[in-house]
Image (tube, rainbow, N blue to C red; front, side):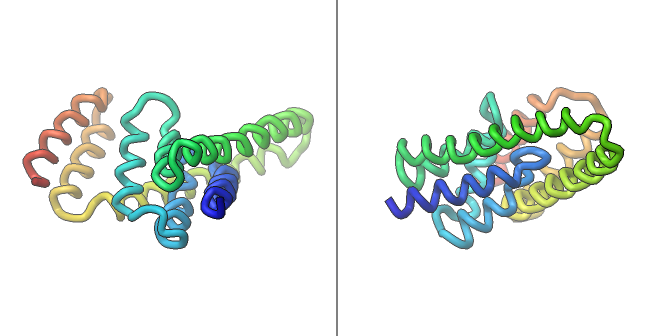
Length: 173
């Protein structure tokens, strides 16, 4: 029961950090789930995150895996509700207030500042995942190759994912 309360508290808090998307909450999620509460290892968190990226639907559904890992199916349900409900209610409420303030002169300035905050949080999440997932030259080569191809072309990432999977099978035995 104590662990369930901890899970709900942590994921309710993380829910409110998702400005810019779920990736924005990743650094704090890593700190809390790996470093503070020791529910997972950094490697397990990266694997769950990767599964979330590969699975259809919202990528942050990977949090259900954390809840399941810690407290079984009830933990998965509790974490999912704790993560998505606060953000859902806040979005609904802020959306209504934001619409009400459509003529407010500071609205555009605040929105531009929040855009920058969301990009900063997103980059912090990318760095946190990269530090945990790229542990050697082979992983770095795969990551930078995929990044380069995606930046230089309009290629569908699916073939790159397949190639990276083959490379991983050959390089990381």
